[in-house]
Length: 582
Image 1 (tube, rainbow, N blue to C red):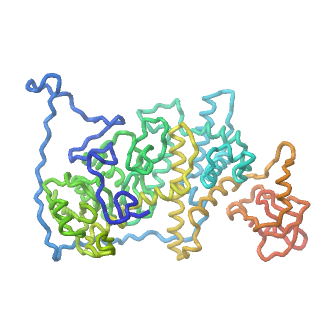
Image 2 (cartoon, rainbow, N blue to C red):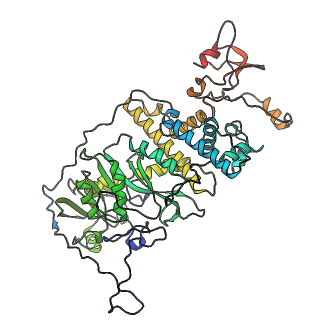
């Protein structure tokens, strides 16, 4: 994911966010006098119509608006104008060891959360049909989640195809039957429908939110943090669904996310149509209030630096964060900078690419620097800790000269491009292997999204531990292997996994001919957490003798493990079966 752009994947330079009338976020105010919208886009703090007799009949007069004084801005002389970037001293804790992928996953989906889901799903099934019992337990639920994660790796267009004769996937079909899988999916539930809802639009998924959010917030934080929005793609009917035409996924649920530059999630908030002010914090409008809400988990006065884009930026937000002890940086729309004026875009274009201007002002005793930089087009960036100096150079392609040219690159823009792409990185990692199980229930779509988010968070924590212990990158598991290991552990770890075949033996001629073909690559063995769980590993004998799967063992044996499905020596001389499972 290229973060050197404000649109996501633009290649050259920094470009501004859309103008207010073309804003990607139709639910957030673009003016400095912001409002709080409800789910229909209407203001929730509207005052009654004015009863001024001078107003035209049939059309209420607009309520009087409070005029805000312009701020005294002054041009910054570039000599000796650099601001010192806060130094990060609070280092991340060092890892003691590298854990198994399933352990990172269970840090978030712990036993208590799984048991609560089991309880609510069984209750929901009973409420739907008192004569039918779901009989869901922790093992079955983990197996269901494991099959869902496997499905995200194979990505067949229909869920029933994983059990079909033509497209059967052993990792899914051997875990549970198709009817049992569909029964669990149909009754998967996270709340008691008879409990009071208290006007909570997310009450169906509140159990998952209340369990995961504190765990995300407790993660050790890096210095560079950013706030942005992400979309959970869906086109079904839902009052929570938003439409943002400039996003890769235009329809979906909007989630505001606080994460670091790698995409590690520290906090989130699902948009339900209304953003309330944070208790004890100033009401600075919907877009600023959501940043203050997410920033509550940031430790104050330890030099965490927060980045965001022009959907959220305003002078009031910079001041509120500075008073909270959190320096901030972000692009900003010029109409939100009261009294701040720069040269026009055409004037800066005549001066050439790389031209920039810098303004400075004291807003409620907070020093704010604003830089307007012209690359392919103009962009305005504001900060309470950074400035244009030191100015470096970057390469840009000149279409007239047909070659790369050097242009000036202000430090404030360089910092934004480098550290603002955290949520874009998170979106890319989730999109690689997204769970795409279809459902008309909005809470199932959000639940599967949180499963994806937890796996990505676990993988990023795993990579952080590997870097702390100096493990080479080529030895580390990539996201695909990490995800596959979690799926296998959920399906097999601690479970009796002896497959019971039913029905008539197969008479497929092609399958019988395939058995006689020359043996191909060696069969893969289960991950360590499955091999050592001491559940369901029974020795079976077969007519066919194969080589033992223990490295450097040259024995041929007819004994295999019923769960791991690999041949292992098991006789009076050697016991590779025991060695393999400890």
